[in-house]
Length: 201
Image 1: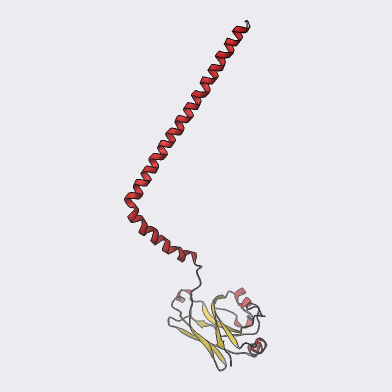
Image 2: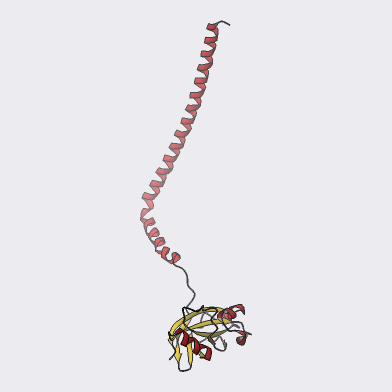
């Protein structure tokens, strides 16, 4: 084949490649155009839905927004304390038991300690413990008598501020074996809450 033949063949092949490339390019552009049209249809449908229903959607959105603070706010344990304080040689609490009846046969007790930032509340051994009490269907008053250990704790703390803890304990709870709140928890007690502010005179 002479040079003219080679040039003619190369031109034919080149033109074929050119046609093939642009044919594929045309297919790609057509597919994009079809996707664009489909997207435009969906957008148009969404806009139409919003126009028809925005009056209903706005109140719903406002209502949902109002619930955001509720779910964003940490949930805290129930406050069972109706009253607390100290009088003479004892501290006392009055407990709302309406939400504790299902915990029977577990019982309730009170632990008192002197507020002292230098002492860990869970390992403070200078505490006073009450007896355990059967959970009753009406508000309960429970007293805890001050001990020599607690008196020494007040002298060391020099605050005179009392903190009282409400504990739910097993029916056979070994009170005499408990010297700290950590001991109580190891033996199955559950701290339901605490209040401070009662002052020992």
